[in-house]
Image (cartoon, rainbow, N blue to C red; front, top):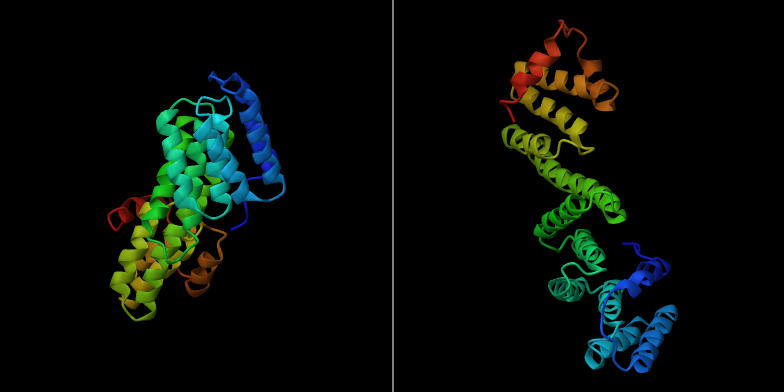
Length: 264
């Protein structure tokens, strides 16, 4: 997965840290260590940079650079693909700084750690659900923040991801001539992931499953739901080309939609 964060953005983020009230000890030394850590980032020497930021927190825990060093440490672990370590560091930071200047960013980076795990098929799917919970919390806590804006995009992707996984299970059953369990899976997609991009195709496949079971009333209802909600979809067109004798009475679509609720 491509890197989400840029170093220049982090510099802008941390430039406001002067407002944070902390005690400074041995300012000259901790400043030099901090600046060395920054220089090492610019040189792409992330592991060496981490050592410098750890040193600040070990030797100068009350330094004005302490919070920045903690966040840089976590961010760099994220960059070198250590999401579990990043989560641990940020969780510690948030517990000590629930209202800290970097807490909102820390919450976002934790969500990103779970988000990047989604791309690994060997990971448990629970990480996807955790990522969704984290992004929802960000949006709820501060809906107008820059992190909330990105969280909305990530949520859309994750919902599509889960919907497609459920859909693929349904397709497995459908291809193996098991329309009933296929319908059950497709119903989950329609019920739980209504905003996902896979909905039109799901309705189409559900129509096919009902046709296999010779449940024409159900297949007709499914077709009309598809046509009502996605009139320009290629999946609607596919069925329309097969069916040319559907009677569309006034108010019929609305009544059919109410009836379909019982299916899902």
